[in-house]
Image 1 (cartoon, rainbow, N blue to C red):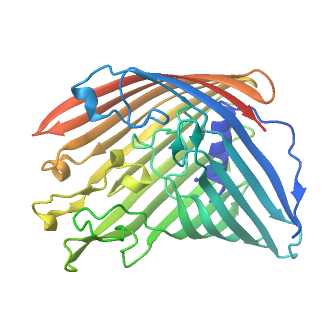
Image 2: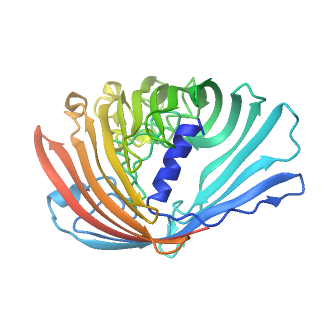
Image 3: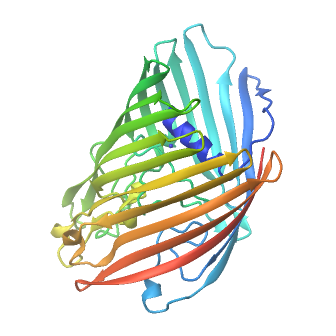
Amino acid sequence: MNFNIKKTITQVILLSSFTAFAAEPIAVITKSGVSATLYGFASLNAAYEDSKSNNGNFANFVTASDLTNKNDAGWHFTPNLTRIGLNLSSGNDSTFFKANGKIEVDFYGGGSGNAPTPRLRHGYGEITFGKSGFSILGGQTWDLISPLVTPTLNAGVLNNSGDAGLRRAQLRITEKVPVGEGSLDFAVALVRTIGETQPYNTSSASETGVDANIPTFQGRIGISVPLWVEGKKFGLGISGHYGQEEIDLDATGDTKEIPTWSFNVDLTLPITSNFTFLGEYFIGANLDTYAAGIGRGLAANTEDPESVKSIGAYGGWLALQAKFIKKLAFNVGAGLDKLKRKDIRKVGGREQNFSFFANTSYNLTDAFSLGFEYLHIQTDYLTANTVKEADLNRYQLSATYAF
């Protein structure tokens, strides 16, 4: 979530674990000569939770209400994962410049239970320079950091439980250097700093990311090469980011710059033709808008605004994918997000989040699949230096029609 090979490979693996692909797509040529290929899937997900998650349609952590009202169970039915996309390529390219792009939406943008609002996932254009491996991308797509995706049926994957990284607007430069049958990839990007509502100055119209004096910088170095498994590539990447948020301490103009940063490692290791091992690790601070740190970025104390600071966090996830026949797939994995206790000692709240999942899917036809997943989440809350555990079990069925 583009940079491009690692994320694309992972998305294909993920989708193929619970979605069958339809026949070869047919492109439509637009008036300007651009080829637009439609893809996507219609999906229903039905989940039973024996306690309350932060969002039943995509569970990431257990709410604090479980500490006082355990086993507050509920059902969640949603078509919001339904996805529609267009892959774009130009038929009027020069012999040197080649252009492509993507527009993709799902329906997690809000709205009511039976009238969900579309949400832009990807919207970008990219140009490559001949056979040099050099490309420039502009628009919204996946972060460079932590490019893999946990293979869950839960739409929230393991965000805020080890799987860092989302999507945002960016200007990216990539250089792909051939290495045998693989490549060594170098990528850097200027990205939008997505902050949060000003914690102290409620009259301020600006959020903390917009107020920052610099954009956020991201970078990644990765290698992708075939090893001993035919048709699969080993992948290893190192990535990171640095940015700032500007906090308005009061209404008089006093401000404080708070950093956001991360260091990340990603690994794709094919073991045999049937088994693939995936994993990521991250460490950083102020990572709530990167779906890490259990959704917590700043520790703000209204009694002492000057004490506002980044919350340090670290974590990661591991998964094993198994596919024995074309129609049947299995995935199992776990993830962990943990905050530095010293950073939240005065304010308390979520301190640690652990998740475990196991799922299977079966393709009834080339386009229609059914899947089942078990997900366990344990979220630890810190109150007056006492840790209390909130946990839930989630059972999910999915039905997906791909096109």
